[in-house]
Amino acid sequence: MVFNRADAKIFNRQPFQLIETIPNELGRAKNKEMTSDKPGSSRTRIGGASTTYSLTGEKDPHEDAAIQFCRQLAEHLNKSHLKHQFDKLLLVAEPKMKGHLHRELGKDVLATVEWLEKDFAHLSEAELRDRLGLPSERAGVANAKRS
Image 1 (cartoon, one colour):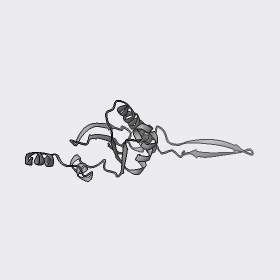
Image 2 (cartoon, rainbow, N blue to C red):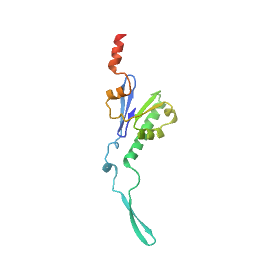
Image 3 (cartoon, rainbow, N blue to C red):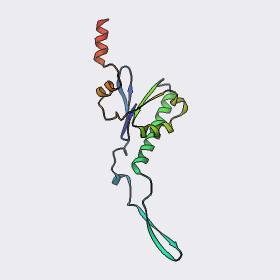
Image 4 (tube, helix red, strand yellow):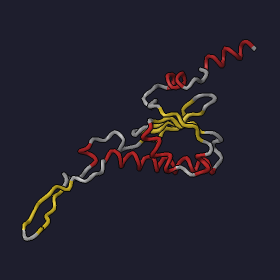
């Protein structure tokens, strides 16, 4: 599986082919679309004087969306593993997304995982296959003809 904040693509290794795409609707959203209002404010009364301060918060809506997406992916992978849909799993993602997903996966799934910390989600299927060092379909056909 190759994933980033915007989507996840699940591939079969041999033959290399896309099986499923899981989109993250908030993965490409702009800040304006992710927050309903501007940061609020609050009043505090200290020793008779009233002070107003901003409630900007420390949370990043994009980060929250990435964490939620990783929870969704983990649930999908945990269920797929229970159904014996894979024995080994190669997960390819940039380090931060890897960390989010790693925290959410069950121990049984983690035992099957090999990680590659690369941002390959933007690559085409052919480029991805080449970067992962997998044989192309043409190479498989050529080898079959030689036999």
